[in-house]
Length: 222
Image 1 (cartoon, rainbow, N blue to C red):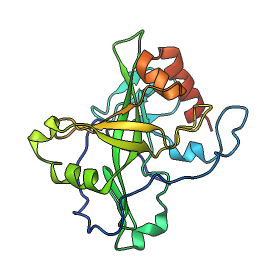
Image 2: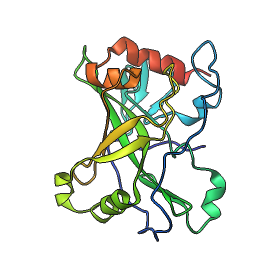
Image 3: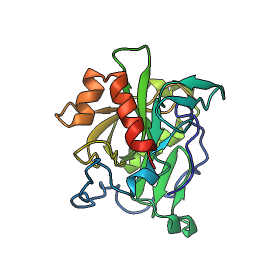
Image 4: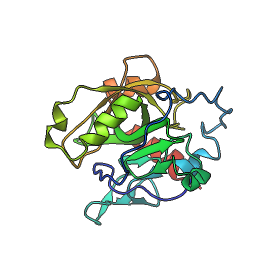
């Protein structure tokens, strides 16, 4: 997959109201993840996780919001599409991908949100831009309220994480999540269920700037 994410904290809406067909979506099972290299990354992972700001190394980045250079590593990375999306789906009338929502074959539905992680030794928040699969009904509800200020009052929607984050030793696919709708213009907040998966632990307990630099070293090399 190619292309860079824009500002991860924002979110427009270009997806038309889907024509619903068939049963609600089931999580997409991909089997056991491919073996990881000594660095913990598969070769294809480096093409999937992209910084949400211009960066050439772990020591400086250019903010996508203000276009100004800042010291330090990027604080957000993301994937432009769910793991199940294939470029050929663009030719299908029952499939569509925008920067915020995705529909595959008229029966699998996804929303783009943020897994936010506090950085304990700074005032910053680190975020992963991820895709989560929703039930047909919840996707339709979220879509209908996308520009409605009252959407903040919605209860969280259950979803399956549909992005592989290659910096973790265990696959992040199909982790259970809750999708919290925020004010218009902000991406949904993705909260993982409290398991012992390293991603869930980091969201609960936070990380350090050294860990943020470790992400940059893994994702920006090569």
